[in-house]
Length: 265
Image (cartoon, rainbow, N blue to C red; front, side):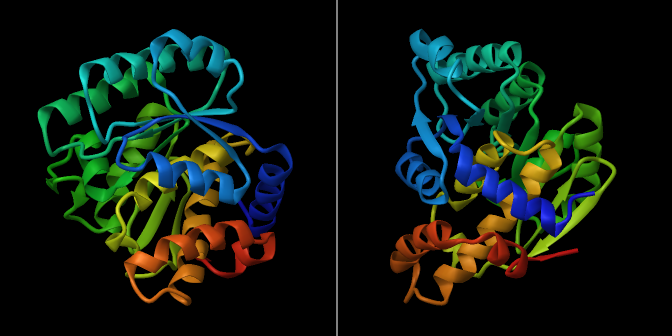
């Protein structure tokens, strides 16, 4: 069972080892995602060209697949990257952005789920419900459900796929199909900034590169988001000033703050 001491250890390991996180992600969030990884202490690479995937994944500690802006070529590259990562033993974090909103998104997320055998799936409640096959709806890529609406679906998805699942919301829910944790904290400004859910996925990827279990990686990533969100909200005047303070919060985060700020139950 993950403990506060595990969170301290995993943040310290991330800072010491600087895991390289290979992101094939959507172009709306690339800059913010890369800066967030750097601020926390990881090293980002944002590359989707199939011709270099084998070389780059030979260097990577984790692979993040985010389906936010889909095209045929990117889908092909994601599958190719997943195959290489599985062969090399590189942990994969899947973000099924907008699953349930269109057939393309849902089908792509499901096919990547089969190809990638992800260590962690990170999504909002509507996306997790869609992947688990429950009745759910999304408004664009935004959730129309609270995280607790998807707890049973998340457990089912985790058990079926042998992975951890992180459901983001006002309270996040993290499970490996057996154990389940609620992570409270953050701030209402966070949904007013585009891409913070995608950032959460990337941070989970950074932890997946150093943590001994996917559940610990997912829990540490979501707790880190809550802590940095509270740091930023205390200093920001609104969404426009939230982002720089959020990055500062990631950079300033200490192991003691990581376990003190979010409330994990």
